[in-house]
Image (cartoon, rainbow, N blue to C red; front, top):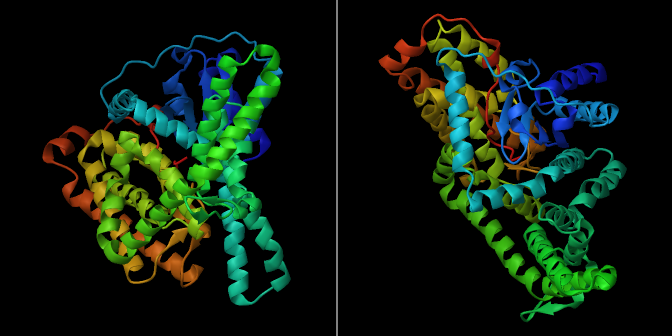
Length: 497
């Protein structure tokens, strides 16, 4: 979108979230505008969901507005400009609540969303969300470097522009070689430490000189332990920084605290964490390879079918470090293309719901507005606006995801494994990031076959088994299409982002 359109969206959003004075922080990930709000009761959620540019809203540690992978960065920038112009001092209006109405899918989706938020408020899930917050800001760079790496590989395979291929190597690999530093920086920032100290301790892992060191009788190699080691080292740095500050006089804090944090944290990373995290990372790589080589059908079936329930439980956050570890270790993650099949099952399911509920204008309007985003891997509106509130269609969507995952799993078992060079996108948006042993074209063919399988099985399972007579009697009736139905939801895959 142009700057004018982005500004118009930002101007429409601002009063509906309580005005400038109600906003404490502004950030964004791949698809969502993430707002830290002083008072969430000032949000007019019904009006916000009714905005054409808004694909859904999510209440989590931040208030998240789903805008899609294209507009989100531009709208975020324009919102920041509006806040700067307002001086963050404008009084926050008190918007009226949504007008009462009959029970519908939007109401059910809102209740399920609220229940999920309560269910996910456990220490473990809160910790997983915080770990995911470490990696989400890195996703744009991972995607950019992944696409450049794919372009370099394609040119090399074709034998074209060898000088350009040589130049693209540092461009695509420079960030990855320093990924541990960025993880350490973000970890310290997320968990309340000094970011640069977290990055400094984590930088030990990628320093070339570690090749001269030895731990547990083994010589270390630069990068050993990867992002898992960096995460552990930065968490240790945060603890050391806090512990030192408690016992050091204030007059000496500026000298002693950074020194103790870097010294003890660096030594711990060098003589313990690198080796341990390296073993864990290697085990993750071996496990992923073994799963696809020996149990591709079953692995794909289970992973593709259970990913949406994992999202509902908030456990999908734990997969982000695993994806990143595989990308750093093997150059791609073979898990993401399988998990992306959950979105394919959701799309096929939505089309079937559209045809079965031919008299329900409200549901059909929601699907029409949400389906394009669903094809690009943004499944929030479809999950909480359509399939989950209906019940059975959510299950049949999972069946479609399982079928698509099984297709890709079988291909991997037969030697045609498909990986993604970055984490973040799914659906059609994942095509530019695909890689595999037989080249990008073969990888795209396998992934496309998985999508088609997910679409088809999700559609057929929903059309023939997704509705009982009672469900059809309740929802296949004429009713107006309220604008507020056009985007409700909680996140699915990208989390992953």
